[in-house]
Each structure stands twice: as structure tokens, then as C-alpha cells.
Amino acid sequence: MAKTASGTPDPSPREDLPTTPDGLPALDGRGPAAREAGPVTAFFHRHHHKLWWLHSFYALALGVFVVLFAQRGYQRARWLMLSLVAIWMILLASFRFVGTGNQQKLGTRREKLRFLVITYVLKNLYQTMLFFLLPFYWRTATLDAGNQWFVVVLALLAVLATLDLFFDRVVMKWRMVASAYFVTSLFCCLNLAIPALVPIPASWSLLAAAFVGTVAFWSMHVPFRLLRTPRTAALVVVTAALAAVGAWTCRRVVPPVPLTLIHAAVGPERLPDGRLKYEVTALHASAMRDTTAVTEVFTPAGAGEAFVHVWRHDGDEVLRLNPTVDQATTQKLRLTSSLRESLLPDRVAGRWALDVETDGGQLVGRFTFTVTE
Image (cartoon, rainbow, N blue to C red):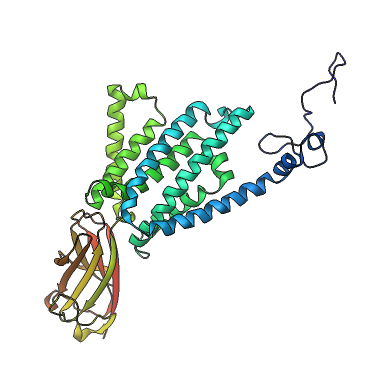
């Protein structure tokens, strides 16, 4: 042990001792710290990185279980609102008591333990919420239409919530990163959960999610006492309105959850009950005189959404039709439209697509077929 100038032993740890990234003495079995610590403590210090990664794999497996659980019903989505409120309050408390960036208060064991508890609760809330959302967005996304990238971003957020070291040292270290992560998750969640609480069209839910997300972002960076001032409140409302306009502009890249295209087909003849006599994926140009499309859309929120059939030929829009509703139940609509011979282009051979869109312009699903000469 080192001695002070007066000859008394210096109780502080030596600066040349190796330390872990958390600032703890490295218990590698060779230094004084390892000799003084018990075998259990030494084991955790020696393998703490491996244990964190093991916990991350466990969290990922738990996320897969949540994905399977989410298949059982859409109405459970309303409980996501409780997770959002809990995450928001915990984040605000974390910024206040733990700090952010290089000013984080992690100097004592008590402060480190508090930070560990906060991040552990947050990660579990995020994991449950984000993995619950994944199957709904996956079913609604169209892989060749551009909105599949939104699902990729959502999956990335879910996986990051299982990576303990990254979440603790990057997401929860910087206020801007933590708030951006939360607002993006909030937008994804509200876009699905709002129709479960209030039956409104998907496009309205999109606008509401963007507006609320912007307000939540401001709440994490501006004290509540300032938010009550007229100037700050006006700034928040204006930026939230601009965010809603931006969401509307980018609506085509956001899957219109919870709507799902469960069946789509085209054919030249229909049965008396409205179904197609036979469904085709390829037909000759001579059979393209009067082609009927029948689609079924799952609407679990029962929002009374209006839809459009968009007929495309080799990627170009040919016609946009308002389909008739042949059969409607509480959660399913059968939509029908017909492409008449007089509306066909001069050349009909090629790749055709039938897009089912909301009247707000969000793509619900796509069916493709080929016309040969």
C-alpha cells in the first residue's frame, strides 16, 4: 500500500491498477482487488461483459415471445399507452436525477445502482412495446413499395433495446439520443394504438401520432414552467403542426396499421355471391376485356376507412377507382372494382398491379399479375 508524506498508509486505490470500463477495479485474479474480493464478486467482475451479452440474448428471446403473443389480438394494443406514459415519466426522472452526457451522476454505488434500475425498467418496457408492434407493421407493409423500410427501422429499435451495453452507454447517456429514440418509438406506438382507443382512419392516427410525438420531445428539453408561457406554448404548437404536415407528406412510407390486405385476386367472371369464378395470376391479352378485382381488407379498429383501387401497368397508373363494398362485417370488408375494355391502354401486355390504398394515400397491399400477348 502506498504511503502519504507523513508516512501513514494511503487508503485510496492505486491509479496504476487496471479498471473496467465502468470505473471499477479490474478483478483479473492478479491484483490486490482480486485478493480482497470474494469468489462471487470476482466472477462477476471478471465476466461482467459476457453476462451483459448473455442477458441481451435472453431479452431478444423474450422479444420473440412477445411477437408471438401479439398475434392473438389487436385490442391488446390499447395497453401500449400505459407503457408510453411509464417510459416518458421514467425518462424525465432519469434526466433530472441522473443527468445526461458527461454530467451524469454515476460516482457512487448508490447512483450507479439507481441508474442500473432505471435502465433495466426502461429496456423491459421498450422491448415489450416494440416487439409487440412488429407483427402488425410487418403484415401491413408491402415489400416492393417502399414502406418496408419503416418496418426495418422499427425492428432496429427493438433489437437496440435488448443490447444492454449500447442502451446504457449510448441511448441513456445523451438526452438528445434518448429523446429521439423515445419519440420515434412513441410515433410507431401511437400510430397503432390510437385507433384501438378511438375508431378513426389511419391517416388521422398518423397526424395525431406526429403531433403528440413533437410535444413529448419538447417536454424532455424544456422545463414545464416554460412550457406554460404563451411564447413557448405557441412554438410547441407550431412545430407540432409542422411535424403533422411532414408526416402527411411522408405518409406513403408508413404502413397504415392496423389495416391488412388479407386476400386479393383478379379474374374475368364473378359468382352470384360476389366472389370470382376463378382467380388468375397470368392471362392472355384477349381475356383482358373486362377484368374484375376482388380484395378483402382486415379492419380490426372498425374505423369506417374508405379505400381506393389503383390499377397499374408496368409501374404506371392506369386508373383509380372507388371500389364497391360487396360484403362488410365488423372487421372485414370485401371491395370490388372492374377495369373495362374501354379504359385499357393500347398495349395491355406486361406486368399489372392492383394497389389497395386508403383514401388518404397509404398503401394497404398490392396484388400483381401478368398479361401475355
